[in-house]
Length: 197
Ligand SMILES: [Zn+2]
Image (cartoon, rainbow, N blue to C red):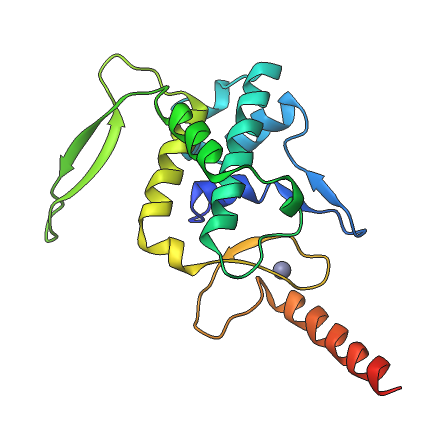
């Protein structure tokens, strides 16, 4: 599996997904699954290939993910959140507390970079002597994402059965992918016929 350009917090949110049968499944439901996810997303860790997770690590990622999905639900207002966990979201203050607590596990310092032919850019990296904590890395990425331009493009897909958050690529996009658009059109068509009949 190749690491994609999808922002990390979105990748994390998408580990809760539709199971194909009208229910919801969790890609991170045991520690080995978390290890595989980190290897598939090497941006999450300085040594993804030797990363190991136990139940405590898994619980920490679940705690953070609930906060991220709550903040995503907040970001897509006034449209409704993903139906996967709409009834289990945290109060906003609690989501912020969990996110900031995770971010604080790895103190970072600002780093200036000035690539050839471009303007100076800054990013943050773990302070000298600090190891990188997985949930801290994910929390830092979430802070960057929510305070950056991509937040405005975040949407919840409300096609039948879909529970995905996605980034809108063009102004009229309503669904996360064409197959969701097709399902939504078929459902609307049936609904019209039901009412007409
Ligand atoms: Zn969808």
